[in-house]
Length: 512
Image (cartoon, rainbow, N blue to C red):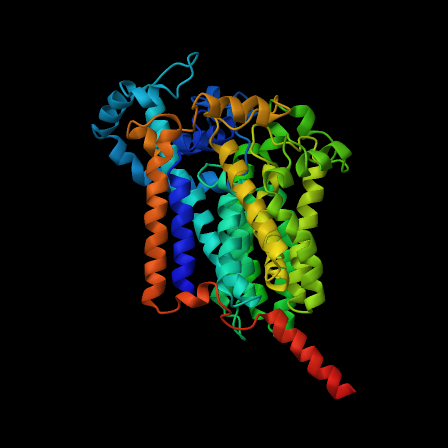
């Protein structure tokens, strides 16, 4: 039954993610896509042929390269190499001709744009294909793992479903769940490492330890700022190995991380001239931001703190107010006396990433939905919410408040994510008034599968609503087949908090 719920959560999130196409002509995504195309098509890391479609590039000598952390692109290279033979068939030409004459699709194109071409369609197909494997699938799997891990807090199903679906559908993670960025891949890898450690048996095997090292190393080369999360998870691993008095797994973890680091350093040396030289140091644009302080980091500023928390510009808690319950959740978690190591880890990654984002000279992250630099830590930040739902879950005010905040978060995240054909510009100080409302008012909704079917504007969402209804019914029916439907909202056992409280009560009576 546990796996059934985890699979259903992942399936629903995957459906919602892939229903909407990745943003066309997104410079951030294009930078990584350019590297993939250059390697597969031309056998080089040089993106000279494609650099006009992005502003995120590095220049070395007379040649241009992607300045992004290479992890996502590295995965995309073999994936595109496998897809490429299919694109050499007449399929591409037929699809191009169909899109050129497609009324609903044409309505999503900008009047000042250059229209549809075979090369653009090829680029878009590859972008959709790679985003599925690099972002959508990892995000869906991550939500399923969240549900499974939260059993350590409570066997109750409804709080865990609420948090897992809330993470995937009512936080900015949804906006990037089907985009060729590195945030969601990094988040997945970090949580996998944590999950493998937290759910480890008494003896941690060499394979598990090697996978943990591999995941941590690859998360870093996918998004460099997550070094602030890799370090606490590494210490958490050391805590586990010391508790079990095992040295060998630690060595295998180091081997896994070293393998990734060796490949990454070889790439840096070949492209930028040194093992620790990064593309950002050779960026031709954004030089002021990249060379401010240490790698664009200074000290937290009020503008940044306000901007990434409550401002209409990039405020996380204005976009997803249900996440505010994580703050009392940390207090309730500590008072419960359970999962102390996990509490410290969760606090460390949350504080570390908040301080990083608030210290960045470009804290708003360009065109974005919410503070995108915080995306990798969101799976950890939702964990304390489980303690709020378990401890206060029977109180009417909590249920009403949580329901309303989740509803607003869902509406806010989806309305901003789906508005127009690009994420809100950083030139708009109030994207709600200047981007979201105007786009929805004229039916300018992000391209999706409904658009391909010929549906325009809001009506293009109709097939998704029907598919979600069918998926929900199928989930409920499968639950009934296991004869455990009452446990979905019933007691279903005691939470670890309740058990710990009773244990402390018994100890107090004994001492008395």
